[in-house]
Length: 432
Image (tube, rainbow, N blue to C red):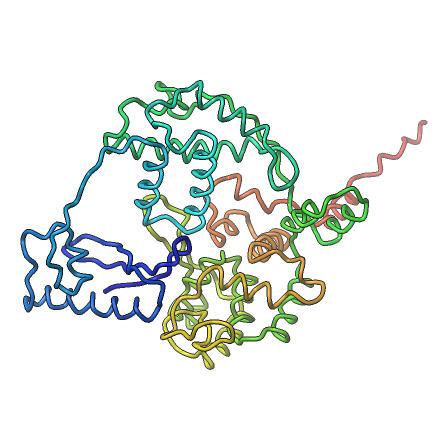
């Protein structure tokens, strides 16, 4: 009936629940997990009393959610004020609080974009005063700034920031905070930008281990550039098998090996692995169901089915025999050194999954593997090399655009040489 999670930005725990056909999300005003669980239990109890008629909510309650969280004991009737927002910072902050259904990665990206907008345009700037000329100035300033790779901010990055700005503007317009259309898009053609954005350069393509080492060996790269290169790594089938064997032998906790195996054999995103439930593994049908958050904008979540690889089936069946409890596929022990004991087996957070992934690979050659996305790239590349049709790979990996579907159409360098070997020698004719 209710759920809780820790807000990474504030550190406070949040509680979410439904009542009267509406969904509410409120802060528990505590950073203690045990207090949050008590509030969750109290919320579920009060909702149960309301649904069965044992308790009745007063008609003059301004905020039903606050009344429920208080256990039905709220005496003061808080007034819900609707201030006329105008400043860029306060509108952006209100917009962020309203984005409950977006994936965590999307929210983090928007927060980063908003921070740049507030930094360059001014937090106390009136949103309605931002004109096309001012926004073009923002673009010109950003393209001359240095990014973390000791280069200039790319046109692709600026475009993402302006897309977030446009979404904030449309959100504000729907609520009457601004009246005129967003200045960065043509009024007659919403798909055409009114600002001039630097054309993006083609990004690096995925590279084999040997290709990356060859580029590093040439010299002239800064430490950050070398670190960034490894982001484009993909592994071949032998390397991926060696990595899995290394994790199996060196992982500190039992859940880490099956977690990494799911990524290697399905190409699942980190968040999809964290959300996975035990019942998503349908061993009788040899299918695994992954719970998505990116494929459809009109749905909070969707699913896709992937054939269950025989080796992954064996790994997961063994893991489920030793599974400590709870509904989620990947769960950590309740007691782990260096962290507070858990009260129940809940969903592993994305940052926790990344931490345990990196810890399992920190010793030896595998330390350069940046994260779960390397296994996702490798899955797509190996499927391509094996001759799996692109539309099937796209279905398995949850890709929707043609650009993403073409992402893994590159071949391993040794394969390219094999194909070139089929080109005729074009020997001179006998007459010559």
